[in-house]
Length: 323
Image 1 (cartoon, rainbow, N blue to C red):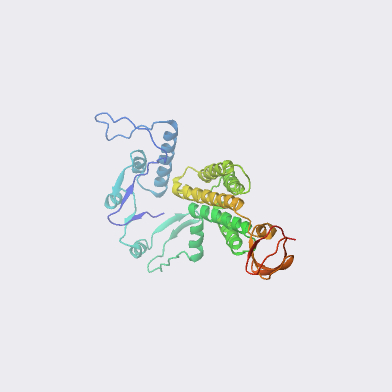
Image 2: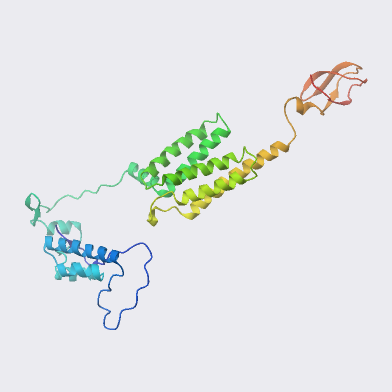
C-alpha cells in the first residue's frame, strides 16, 4: 500500500532469471543497444510477459508508474531513490523506520473492507527475534546437518550391534536418526535415494561377515555415493549436498568396513587363545617328582597331570591332551 525507500538505495532489475546456464546471445546490432533483447524461446517470453503484467497490475492498483514497471522487467532497469520518487515509482523517502512512521501518519490506504487512515505517529517498534528452539530447528533442517545426523545415527546402531550392551551408541544413534529424519522430512527427499544409502551401508557391513572378497563392500560404496547424490530431489543448488561431505562419509564408512574385514581376517589366522585348543601344545612347570601322576603349574593355575615318563620338579613339560 505504501512504497518507501531509504536514501542512497536503488530499485529495479526485475527481469526473471533462471539458475540454469543460458546460451550466449548474439551481440545487438548498432543502434539497438538500448532496446530490450528479444527473449530466446517461448518459455522465456511467457515468464517475462507474466512478470510485466503482474508488476503493471500492481502499479495500476497503487497509482504508480506503469511504464517503468514494464521497463524494469524487460531491460532490468534500475533507478536511485530520488529518481524513483520523482517518477512516481515509490511514494516517499525516509531516513529510518521511526521517520517512516511519522511520515505516513494520517495517510489513507484502501483495504478490502474500505479505506483506513493510518495512525502511526509515535508507534512503538517491537522486534521479534528467533529463540533457541527456532535456531535449533533451522540448524537441523540444513541439508548437510540432516544428512550427517542420519549417517551418525546409523553408525551408532551398527556399533551397538557389534557390541551389545554398550547402550550409549544406540541411544545417541536413535536420537541422531530421529533428528535427521525430522530435518529430511522438511526437505524434498528422494526416498529411492534414501533406500540406496541404507542398502549401501548394509552391504558394507555385510562384507565383514561374508567372504565376497570386497564385492559387497565396493557395491555398497557405489550405492551409498549414488544415493547421497540423488538424496534431495531438487535442482536448487542451496538444497544440494556438498561433494566433499558425501566423499568424506563414503570414505569413512568404507574405511570402517575395511578395518572390520581386516580385523576378521587377522582373528581367523591368529592362534586360539581360549578353551581346550589353546592349552594343547603349551608348556607347563612340573611341581613334584612323579612317574605317573602329579601336580603341574600352567595358565595361572595348578593342575593334576598324568605322564608316561618320569618327570622331576622344575622341569618343563608339554600338554598333549586335556580331559
